[in-house]
Length: 90
Image 1 (cartoon, helix red, strand yellow):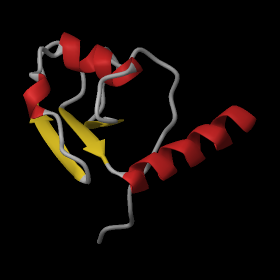
Image 2 (image 1 turned 180 degrees about the horizontal axis):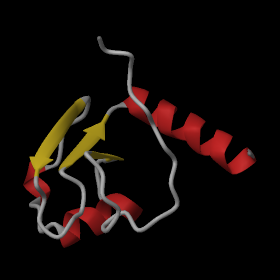
Image 3 (image 1 turned 60 degrees about the horizontal axis):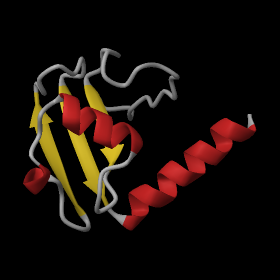
Image 4 (image 1 turned 90 degrees about the horizontal axis):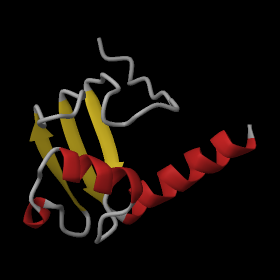
């Protein structure tokens, strides 16, 4: 039976933190953590997701996460902003 997923906000190095999946927002260009991960993992910019799409990368090189998921959509932006505001204000 599936009970949902656990989401943790962790302050750590995004490259070296072991995780099953690392989810990053891609906003039509690379900034901050997504830029760092894409650069270190030696991913090609042409493989970045189109608007309202996502890209999966299994076993990205030089990144501790098993899978990398880059998402680009407005719903993801809202979720990230909401979680960020809650985290910063706690």
